[in-house]
Image (cartoon, rainbow, N blue to C red; front, side):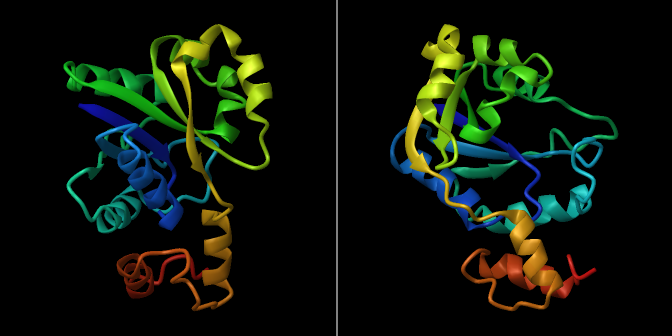
Length: 194
């Protein structure tokens, strides 16, 4: 089985996250996607909702058998991507593990903890973005080109930041961006309102 590991803050998880996962499955890149939310101890994200709340929202979004959620990174200390990938490679020894990565993240993956090790020892499924030149990125990481798979999937510019701002301003037109169950969950728990 081919398993895609999809990390992120998912604050909140939105329709583009789900679309990327489903398209990767539909187009045969992977058979299953596991969403792995970043723990709240991660120092570059200071506005995260609690681990529990983001995990619950992801579970609401995963509406099919080939979409799963893992709480692996939700610990009382920071877990780095290199550790996460090693964890899943050990857990699923007989399967192929792929790291789902946006072109924006690929552009500076060499600055991540053990970033070049991630490139050397893992297969990456790259989601295109208009703002990043894929050829430039492939030139930058030419030594790792066999591990970098450019998918046919392009991310549009839905952002969790924009969604949070809309909620804060009282904008109720969220159905374009969020699943109904997640909208209900956000409203019920008064999330992102201040």
